[in-house]
Length: 122
Image 1 (cartoon, rainbow, N blue to C red):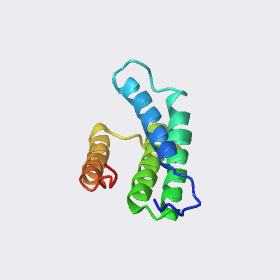
Image 2 (spheres, one colour; image 1 turned 180 degrees about the vertical axis):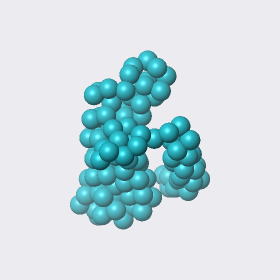
Image 3 (cartoon, rainbow, N blue to C red; image 1 turned 60 degrees about the vertical axis):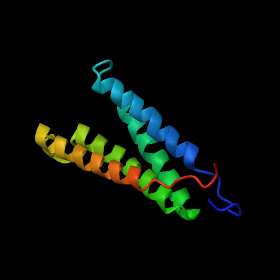
Image 4 (cartoon, helix red, strand yellow; image 1 turned 180 degrees about the horizontal axis):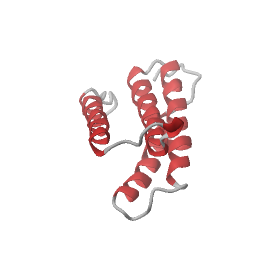
């Protein structure tokens, strides 16, 4: 991020949105808590909206990597919520479709890890 930027650093917001919602989702995946009204709104608001806002702010500050990561993962949360609630009368996701959906996100995450910029400040 440029030192002359008038935009605040959006990374704490984006990382908070990613981290907190991921912890809740993993608590559900480990059968510690059920999929409930606690997880879905958190995924929509903090996991989705907050990360999308952080991604737009990264774009405005010239950080293509941050913009791609935060907006993509923000929309991941929104798409996951649509899968869970199956609106508009569409059929719920079957296990194979859900597996391929998550596989594509795993591949995206692997490529983002490989392309992760190394800090210039050591």
